[in-house]
Image (cartoon, rainbow, N blue to C red; front, side, top):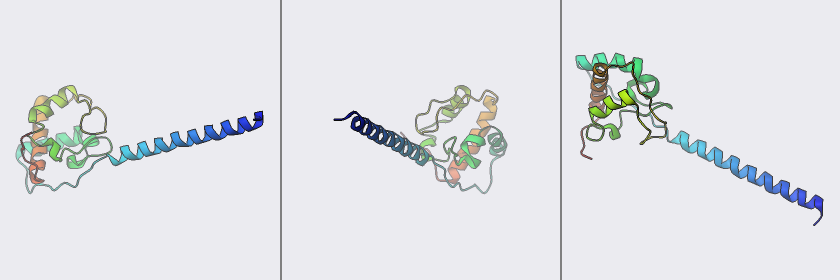
Length: 144
């Protein structure tokens, strides 16, 4: 085989390999984007006083990632989802998440950093808000 033919064949192989790698990258990105979950959230007719206070704290500290009314965004999962029912993620899990952060384990969003600016008492009010939203959306305690 002539040197020129070998160069052409190697160039074609390199081009095909590049195309395969680029195609896999596109498929990977599409898969990650399709894993993003947002939900429609039904609001309760009324909130308790604690949940009303928690709503403001949620908006200030959680909404940027978890979305309005905990509906999820590209940055964080919806908390109005059965995976967060009190039988699977207790209130203590939420306290711990705010205090120490969370390693990603259910979703493709990445790790959640600790939220040291939020006190334990404030986290309790946020939890009350989220739990009342969950109840309004049929999310109740289930044993796991």
